Amino acid sequence: MMQTAQGTLLASGYASDNLKERYANISSLLACDDIKTNPNYASCLTGFNEAAKDGLAAMAEKTYAYTYSFSQTMLKNPTRETILELFDSPQVSERLAFETAMDTLIVNNIEIEGANIAGIMDSFQQGVKVLLALGILQMASVLFLVWRPIYKKMIVEYVNCRRVYVVLPVILIAENKYILKILKDQQSSRFC
Figure 1: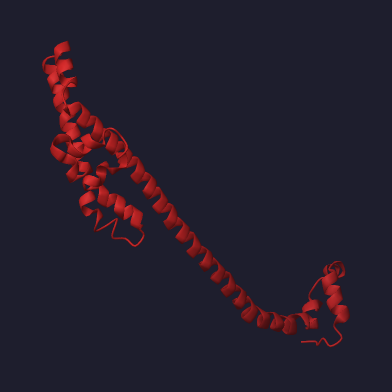
Figure 2: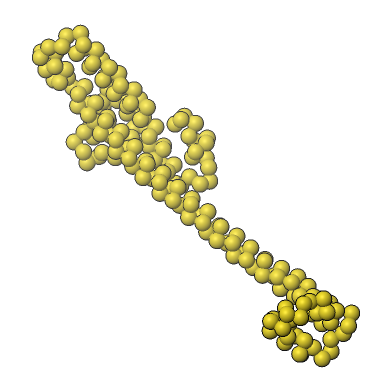
């Protein structure tokens, strides 16, 4: 994934500079930088023949190889002496340094990615707000430009036409104050 990140994830216009820097650090010696104040920093730089220079993948690979050899040694000779010998090995501190660095690196990258995604969502939200405002303005202009002439034509063709009221039941006209008002105010109504 990290080999293609430059051409995919980080090539996107949505990737922040901070995110690009973090992913560049994973693939270099800077993978140890998150634990500069930690006592394991020196071991992280030099551990397993400076495997950190090749980044997170090399660190994980060396840690796995160490853990596998540790378990195989224990399975071959599960004695107290073997345990003491293994724990006296300088590789124990190197493994601890790598694990500390990897934990910190992964947590920090997740935080940076979360902040990057939050930024992307904020920009999407701003874009959606602009589109919503434009849509409302457009609909308002359509209502103003289209609905008003249609409404005026409806008033002229139907409301001011007495034939419309001839077919309505008397009880409906009597109970509808709006229709009564129209009929009272309709001095210039025509029979169409």
